[in-house]
Length: 617
Image 1 (tube, rainbow, N blue to C red):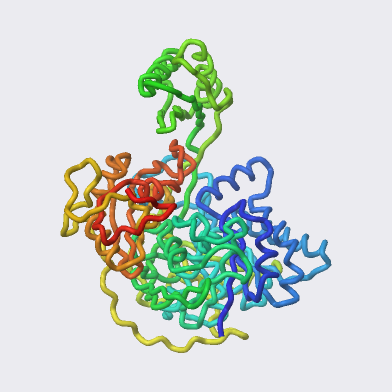
Image 2: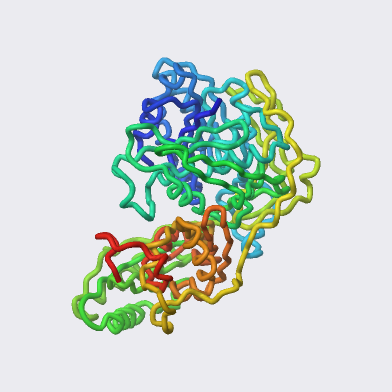
């Protein structure tokens, strides 16, 4: 017996037809969708200030297509589209159902919202104290409140801020009756949730080896066939485009990852224990995942208004681009001094784009005063002057501020058709395990949140049985220093005998992303020999040689030999987070592809044969 959990949204703005595709494309038991990136909470706060909903209205558009069929087939719907207003989203679901002539049981989960609550605003990454007033503050809840709602008969469950994986863990707890001590099954469900949470990124989307993905334009969304022991098969509906392979699953496993201990409200999942194996075409078995008790702290995502920003982009063409950029800057700062602004970022790209971003707490300074000054240089600047951005006003920007608080301070509440369930049905999980207190404080950037204590063994729930005490797990491997020297970088010295110079991406895949103000860069390969070389040579220092822009930042490396992967965390690369980052790539999405394009000297036997896509060097 398996629980088929499908995903139909990886972000706020994903493909609207996906819900209908997943319901009509094959058998599923639960339809889930993830709408809430760290940036989304800030977007929803801005919408609410403008009198718009504090939830994701695109969820309702998808729901309109599938609510009737889901009720007919007994498919449960679980979503975090409630954002800052789960109750309002649930009311909107009731209104939609009434218009369609349907009568679903609708639940919503609250308790994550901590805006206005007193707690120390100490940044979990930097130790700084926040003095500004938070615009939003939301704790990451776990899967047990979702399980409680499903156990109470809910057809649709709407949450606010929960961990992305909770959308899978919650239904798993409901179906299999996992208790707080069932650490390995819980950890397996977290891994399954992490894989499918970003939609098509698990089925070939944004995949380093995209040439291997058939019909990417019609990529199918993923689903996890979750088993009682926490193992799962990742797959997609037949007849859809895309690819599910060990490679595509590995790519998603290393996305937005810190160390091997993936902290969460229900369990700490050990990513260094995951085993991946082929289970047929477009099917990958995920097994062997081990779990540890959750920390006694919860992550709270705080956002506050940082000020105002504006960006102007000029195009430089032809000869002497650095000199032209210098002339453009001198002309600009002669009209409005650089010291006018709280922060300035000037970037000249290899393609000749000169991008100037300014930030200020004064909206007027960052607005027309800046953009008009750029325009005024139009006839008194470098030859070939033209811009890509018209003069405009400044835009407000928010700052992301991660905080850790004691789990006991957060109390999830579950409402079904407007009636609150008893407190012990969906809350109180911080003390669910007697041995949890003092288990740890949670790593900065980890998605740690309170677990609920939903009723395992409730009517219709099949208990998983008592769990045997697992063997103690070894500490994860973090290697900042390795035994052998760095990989030879082209131009850095003579190459060893029997080596070949190729782009690193010819033998390694990569995927990168954001975790607050930090970036992560996961790198993996396909054979043991290639991984042994990669692990021995791609050190933090070598990474900085290959990507010189990373030189000022602290870089940690975490080894995942079970996945033939390395994960690098670049601390502070994104500044104060996506919304406040002046980078052209504020989420570091392209960092992995930048690395893969860099030439390195590798042992000739490890280099791939020449192909039209990868000609000989």
